[in-house]
Length: 374
Image 1 (cartoon, one colour):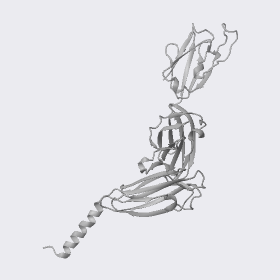
Image 2 (cartoon, rainbow, N blue to C red):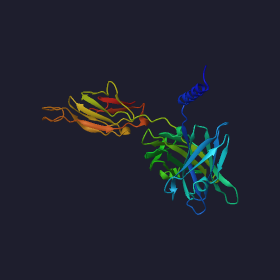
Image 3 (cartoon, rainbow, N blue to C red):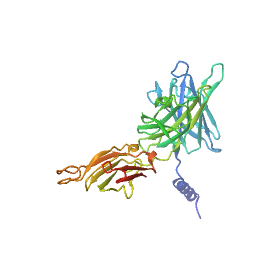
Image 4 (tube, rainbow, N blue to C red):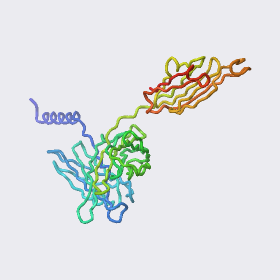
């Protein structure tokens, strides 16, 4: 029969085993990529961030640590932080959080909220008081770690009646260079690169002006933001502001597809004889859009020319000659071989097109060819 001591030992061992086998609690971090406290008198004032932190659990309390990552203004010497506990289903308010919780007025940055599990939700409103009463602001959501992307896209950006700011926060322990490419439809308007230290960020105000397109009017622009390290994701956002009302919209960066790798450079040797280009005459010269391409023209019989293909930026020549001891057709006396080399990159806009060329010595009627862009 089991003694009381044996039963206690058995229960202790069972509890210890359950702890060993239980899945470990993990910590999750929710990031507010943009918070500020800019009272009257500060640069670009006044702006404030009111923050709410909520515990979704119905049964358990959760401990939260909030760390302020300041990157604009006179920042504290070390990152200030506050810790607090949320009861089940509790929401905790932090009005003007940068000033009230971190004592860092006249600065801006990001806040990282770390807690066990994934039950903490963070929201905020970044706003400015309006003359005559009231406020005008923008909802800024807390972002999970999975919302940081090495390449992200910001859509529905506008300019003209609106202005657009682009923000980036690097929540990694390693610095990165971020590149913003701004497009209007399929047209690349310009590029802006910024260097970000570890746990730091920036906001590029009036991104259209920053890339030299301040006069452009559009409501269908987008930006692609890329980290120079594919293993280090970035939190990105756009703020689109109505110039008449100051009404603001927050655009969260979404994961974007990776751009295809640049095609491998290619070299095509073109042989010329009377009266054909090989390849070119019987079958087209095949090249690839976006690939640096070198055409090498070499004659194995007589002297020829090449008309060039001006839409692709390929020049012309009247002298592509085989090496001969004598050349009865184009002057007596021998001469070494004369080749012609043209290097170019077919643009994406040329994909699917076929271009004509001809021998400038014999004429298009006797010796011609085509080049096709794949």
